[in-house]
Amino acid sequence: MTQSISSGQDVVDFLVAQHETIRQLFVETLDAPDAETQKESFTRLRTLLAVHETAEEMMVHPRVRRKIDGGDQVVDARLEEEHRAKQALSELENIEFNTADFAKALIHLQSAVLEHAEKEEAEEFPLLKEQLDAHELQQLAVAVQAAERIAPTHPHPGVESAFANFAVGPFASVLDRARDALRNAVA
Image (cartoon, rainbow, N blue to C red; front, side):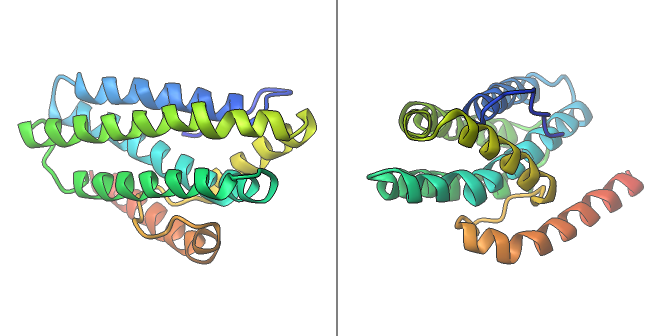
């Protein structure tokens, strides 16, 4: 589900490309012609959102806090947005597909997630480009991709700090991936 980093690609380019994929998956999920297709699209969207945000929380936000003046304020705002999005995504998992309630909740989530992505792209990512050299940006991209490989595949509201993700994330990831495998085996 996660994208590969192309040679020389930095963390900002990688994350912005994932934001574009997220935008496309929202449209695909909203435009799905039936419940089964919507479920498949939503599963891809949910998984990408979960691993993407976890990786940012583990690798990107801590770097912004350590390396950038005023980084705490920028990161705190992004973490609050991520917490609200995880709550909404978690609630959405319990709504029946291809219903008006699902569409309404998904549109609400889409608005929040895209606003969050725009703020990252306008406020946080430029700071990374200004303060980190090309090598650091490339190394951070590799670290983000590694974090995504072990990240949970479902939202876990309340687990937004790097510490919490390192402490709880691997266990949540194993449980999420086992739950996904069992659901796929039964489906």
